Image (spheres, rainbow, N blue to C red):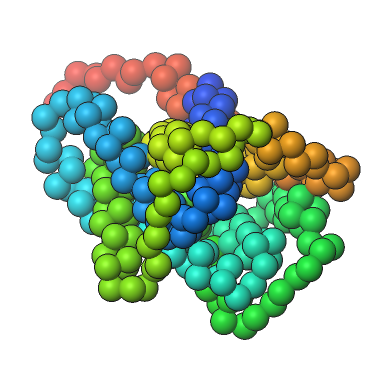
Length: 335
């Protein structure tokens, strides 16, 4: 797992924009379950759904990424290691670990363990000498408690040591996703990092399918979506464009503005959006305890963001003071 970024805290306006972008990313990621469920019910394997999401997402972003790069290919070469790590760990590795985990543990348990990623980032920062403030500690407790409620683990729960290990690897991959997304590197634009990562991730997932590590099977039948039968390519398009291209591009852009820690806590709202999207498109009404859990997750993210904003104010004040200080006038040379 990569270390969290050490960039200075962003200013208030930048953080506000970052919060909006990160929430958009969480909403886009939150559609993946509903869009993917139709494909899985139609006979697609999870590996095939994840692969097609990466392929379509990369195809959608490729031309905009080339235009944003504006011929500055040296930036891509300088950050080649970052792009490969993002694609292998954050895109392919995290997905492979999660779908391997759900073969032996329930989806709720796998998600709960995977979304320990924000706590892992807090712990890693503590190990590196950045002790969490009371606000961050409170935000961590609130967010993780809310996650338990949203996932509603009161039903059938399967726990298997091997599955738990894979889910924890998925948590490391998710933590790496936020850490790598926030890393500025050599100045590679966020859109280019997301595109390159999806290309690398698609290649790794395709190779894993070819060697039999991930079963790949597709179906040409119609898919049930929002109570209607639609062609399979409609679900694939939604999965690739929304849960792929939009989700990863906005995820990198948001993390660059917020930093890995705050972005990871905002990312927990993905499970809240997933419940809401399932409510709208599938008619799966959330129970009151899930709504309470969503409120706790939001409260936790607000607490962590408030702590980061408080840390940013002294830095902005220092820069302002330096700008206001008079420029010293050089006196006559000494005799």
